[in-house]
Length: 414
Image 1 (cartoon, helix red, strand yellow):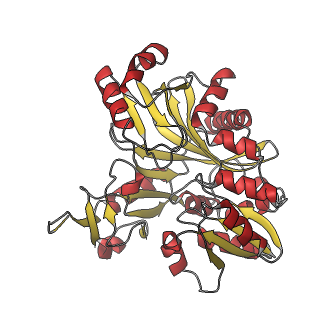
Image 2 (cartoon, helix red, strand yellow; image 1 turned 60 degrees about the horizontal axis):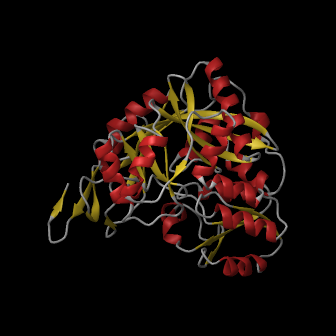
């Protein structure tokens, strides 16, 4: 029997292959660019999974490819970009999966914000505006400052502008008028506080908090992610409050089963949503969950795809994690240009925490977008007894790694 994956996150494919095998199924990956998974594929046996190279933006072609698979039992979609077509295809083939209309709501950050505001779960409304400087007066009047402008269907922190004064607002609107959007531009209140994400798993309305991930963001005005650590050692009563809040938010947004990555700001008045991703967390969040919980959490992804209650829900208990804490740091170049390699990788073994290197780019790639995650060239992962110690180790180790980038007509520079 076969379980298909309509694309996947950059990391975690090997864990997913193992989980499918544990369930007695073979994994088939449909992808438009297998180079995205080069690190994972390099560590898998060539015959570990089937790969169908196809334009995954073509729903008809994907449907034809799925029709040709033997004994198709489930369809996994662990990305934001393909979440709507994935839900539509699962429904088309009568496979277990989420309600496509609910997935469409979750892909619209403005609609989610509006729903939460209506139900008293957010202190901000969502104001859809034209991507033009002429929108400034309406934003000032209806939302106020500080505010955040964002793409309602954006990913990887693209097209996000925190603004604290009128000059920044007008500059951001001018920039937005020159950008392509996946959705539409909207404005909401800026919430002050550290950013975290609640990593949850649900089944038919039951929500279990697997742990909380810390998130270190870049200084404004960039909004790229710099580092993360898991699991954050909140006191048990506070973890309970976060679990309850996340459950209410997910219920309001219509997400009742499967993984969710719920990003929030912990303000002086409690958590405020940043966004909901109806998937396992990106980058190395899945790996962090596997290590901390001492199990392959991708088994739960397969369970959900097969329409059965994930066994992981009953295996996770409140309290300290059974495995090591982890932290990871994203490595960015200092300036745009063509990536030619990295210095410092051969010295990582000297650092504590068993540092591991996960490349996200290959030499020869042009790196241009340094204000969001598209500029990341690799990730350093470390372990420790606590998330705090793991983060210290990851920052230390990653600080020794430097991407070498050649600008147009320039020599390599660190």
